[in-house]
Image (cartoon, rainbow, N blue to C red):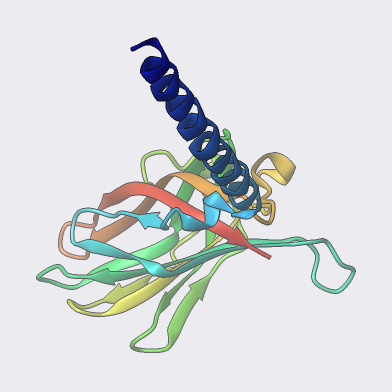
Length: 203
């Protein structure tokens, strides 16, 4: 009876040793594969807008290019959107911004109406650098009209107004809140469309 017990114990130990080594090999190989996989690249881009604007996360992109004498810093975020409202609205680059989780702020430098192939561009900081309510300085009147179903692109420059505080780095992500204000010409009152942004930065 004792001999039979010893045989069972030996068989159990041999089983554990055999499959234990296999499990250890699998864990080591898995850890090596995991260390070479860029987990961040598996996280999908997220882009949300409300109030009749729909953001296009799949086609929106953020670029972070090194400074060169010819191009300067090119820390740009391109946000594609579609207007789905009932009436005509206007959108101004002076009324669009990104508030980043890092504390930086990126201002829009241009708004495109892709269907009309028209754009409005600015190089002037809106509201003396504090455009929190979507208001526009009296001398800044550039805007672009949108009809229901038309698509647009907002281009945000993360160097233009905040120096290096909002600079982007390749391989990182743009994470924060996006604001694009649309104005009904009848009421002349800007209404914010806002949402979360989480875009991988390419270089």
